[in-house]
Length: 88
Image (cartoon, rainbow, N blue to C red; front, side):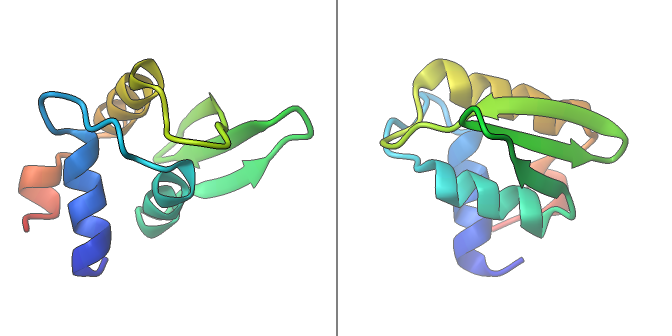
Protein backbone atom coordinates (compact mmCIF):
# COMPACT_ATOMS: atom_id res chain seq x y z
CA UNK A 1 0.00 0.00 0.00
CA UNK A 2 1.53 3.29 -1.05
CA UNK A 3 1.63 6.48 1.04
CA UNK A 4 -1.47 8.02 -0.57
CA UNK A 5 -3.54 4.91 0.19
CA UNK A 6 -2.29 4.91 3.79
CA UNK A 7 -3.34 8.56 4.14
CA UNK A 8 -6.86 7.77 2.92
CA UNK A 9 -7.09 4.80 5.28
CA UNK A 10 -6.09 7.04 8.19
CA UNK A 11 -8.62 9.68 7.03
CA UNK A 12 -11.37 7.08 7.37
CA UNK A 13 -10.42 6.68 11.03
CA UNK A 14 -9.83 10.40 11.71
CA UNK A 15 -11.75 12.28 14.39
CA UNK A 16 -13.73 14.30 13.52
CA UNK A 17 -14.90 12.47 10.42
CA UNK A 18 -13.39 13.85 7.22
CA UNK A 19 -16.24 15.14 4.99
CA UNK A 20 -14.08 15.11 1.83
CA UNK A 21 -13.70 11.38 1.23
CA UNK A 22 -14.69 10.02 -2.16
CA UNK A 23 -16.06 6.53 -2.61
CA UNK A 24 -13.61 5.66 -5.38
CA UNK A 25 -10.79 6.23 -2.86
CA UNK A 26 -12.50 3.98 -0.30
CA UNK A 27 -13.04 1.33 -2.98
CA UNK A 28 -9.31 1.50 -3.80
CA UNK A 29 -8.47 1.04 -0.11
CA UNK A 30 -10.62 -2.10 0.04
CA UNK A 31 -8.80 -3.47 -3.01
CA UNK A 32 -5.41 -2.63 -1.46
CA UNK A 33 -6.43 -4.47 1.72
CA UNK A 34 -7.06 -7.58 -0.39
CA UNK A 35 -10.84 -7.48 -0.50
CA UNK A 36 -13.02 -8.86 -3.26
CA UNK A 37 -14.90 -5.80 -4.49
CA UNK A 38 -17.86 -5.81 -6.83
CA UNK A 39 -20.72 -3.54 -7.86
CA UNK A 40 -24.35 -4.58 -7.81
CA UNK A 41 -26.85 -3.17 -10.24
CA UNK A 42 -28.56 -1.14 -7.52
CA UNK A 43 -25.72 1.27 -6.75
CA UNK A 44 -24.20 -0.83 -4.00
CA UNK A 45 -20.60 -1.84 -3.47
CA UNK A 46 -20.21 -5.46 -2.35
CA UNK A 47 -17.06 -6.07 -0.28
CA UNK A 48 -15.71 -9.37 1.05
CA UNK A 49 -12.66 -9.06 3.31
CA UNK A 50 -11.15 -11.59 5.75
CA UNK A 51 -14.32 -13.69 5.73
CA UNK A 52 -16.64 -10.73 6.39
CA UNK A 53 -19.12 -9.34 3.87
CA UNK A 54 -20.66 -5.87 3.65
CA UNK A 55 -22.60 -3.74 1.18
CA UNK A 56 -22.21 0.02 0.95
CA UNK A 57 -24.25 2.59 -0.94
CA UNK A 58 -22.07 4.27 -3.57
CA UNK A 59 -22.54 8.04 -3.53
CA UNK A 60 -21.77 10.06 -6.63
CA UNK A 61 -20.28 12.80 -4.45
CA UNK A 62 -18.56 12.94 -1.05
CA UNK A 63 -19.30 10.01 1.24
CA UNK A 64 -21.83 10.84 4.00
CA UNK A 65 -20.51 10.71 7.56
CA UNK A 66 -22.76 7.78 8.48
CA UNK A 67 -21.34 5.75 5.59
CA UNK A 68 -17.78 6.55 6.71
CA UNK A 69 -18.70 5.23 10.17
CA UNK A 70 -19.99 2.00 8.59
CA UNK A 71 -16.81 1.61 6.52
CA UNK A 72 -14.72 2.22 9.65
CA UNK A 73 -16.67 -0.41 11.65
CA UNK A 74 -16.37 -2.93 8.81
CA UNK A 75 -12.60 -2.48 8.59
CA UNK A 76 -12.30 -2.86 12.37
CA UNK A 77 -14.49 -5.99 12.27
CA UNK A 78 -12.10 -7.47 9.71
CA UNK A 79 -9.27 -7.11 12.23
CA UNK A 80 -7.42 -4.26 10.56
CA UNK A 81 -5.93 -1.47 12.67
CA UNK A 82 -4.45 1.35 10.55
CA UNK A 83 -2.07 2.51 13.29
CA UNK A 84 -0.70 -0.99 13.81
CA UNK A 85 -0.89 -2.48 10.32
CA UNK A 86 -0.35 0.58 8.07
CA UNK A 87 1.46 3.38 9.93
CA UNK A 88 2.11 6.64 8.13
